[in-house]
Image (tube, rainbow, N blue to C red):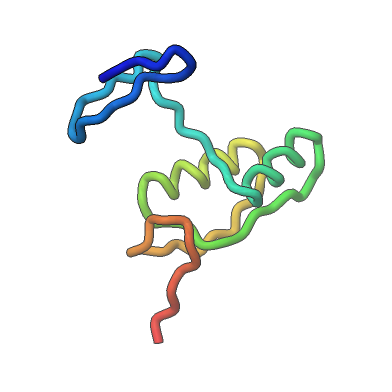
Length: 91
């Protein structure tokens, strides 16, 4: 590992253990979620978000965060796709 004077440490080796001394934060993001949360914070009533979401702990976290900000969530759970993308249709 070498340090740059103008930025964070640079890591060259793969599989090197890196510690986050201040912890790692998990936050909801993306246009729809950000706008819905901001509208709710501004006091708007009836704010809702809809879309596909992974049926996994991260999906549950997103739903909980949105609902915690007063956003009504209409989500289609995607069992095999935890990444943020449209749920494939079974045809």
